[in-house]
Image 1 (cartoon, rainbow, N blue to C red):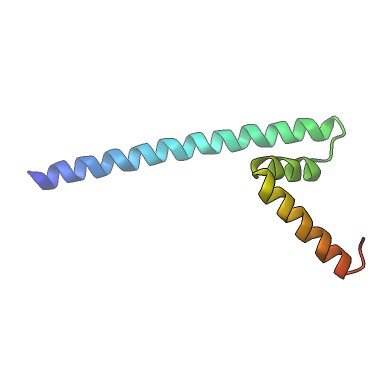
Image 2: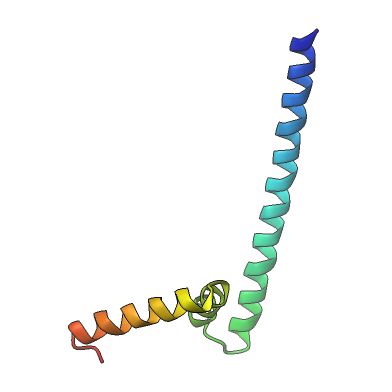
Length: 79
């Protein structure tokens, strides 16, 4: 009997994951649509994606990443 319960529980986990994956796909499609709309309005989506990434970071991590980027740019003569 515990095998049946375990199988039912496993099936429920799999079904939940499948639903969440479908929701994730829907969200990704929505995000892609927003970027497409922004692009059609003349915005640079590559830069927008970089800004979204930066806004996800904490300030100290963002400052550290920017300082490192500046150091690398200076070392390569891109400053």
